[in-house]
Length: 140
Image (cartoon, rainbow, N blue to C red; front, side, top):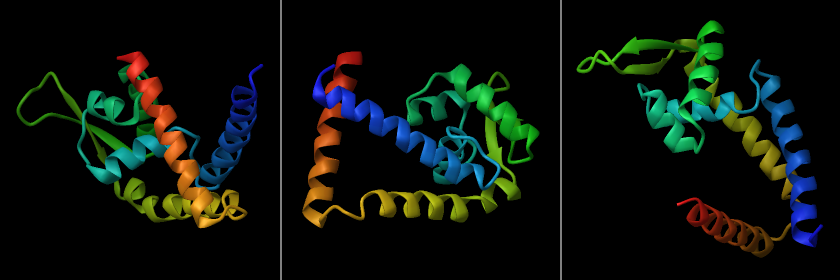
């Protein structure tokens, strides 16, 4: 396996496990925090809008939203102007998770980048952004 792919794959698995453990402390599973973050940024989005924002499929958002609604973190409401659309709205419990989840994510990022210099961290972010752009353009 090429060196970058192997290192990235192993690191990605470890990072996902650490991120999942962080959000589980608040009753969430990895992925649910991304859906909530999209609503923290703009409440009342449609599943399709959230899917586009977090780069997943609309059915994946619908499945996550069902679990979050069952947990009392969001609710579905019909669109005020188009009854064919459903919008997802945070409940007070869903809003209340914003600060603790953001703090968990920041603490994790701080911990895993603690051994990097400020320059190394900036270079890493820049390199990953370039790789992401190549992959996104391949999908277009």
